Amino acid sequence: MAELLSTEDRAALPALGETGWGAVPDRDAIRKVWKFKNFSEAWGFMSRAALAAEKLNHHPEWSNKFNIVDVTLVTHDCNGLSALDITLAKQMDKIAGGVEVVRNHSEPISCLCETRANRIA
Image (cartoon, rainbow, N blue to C red; front, side):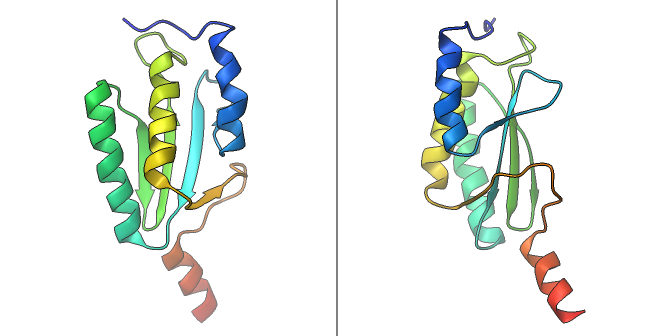
């Protein structure tokens, strides 16, 4: 069973914050939203991230809406953040590369198809 991050281990969280990971309100979890150029790039990222998650036997809570991938990391075994979350977050950042990151999680996030539809309307 995984253990909650210690106070010392939580020192890694500010560095993750610089890459766009943010605290989830009312949960001991972190979240990041990526905005890819298109669906294919988003799906490719998810496929590569799924392989990394499977190797760790640690799976994200995530959703995909066209070119948007929204990921929350939490370790359910300990009901909070563990070293597995830090490891997977860093691996996902590497896999995503320099793709756009949505840093304001309080605003609605429009996917590319919604953005196009709004321009036509």
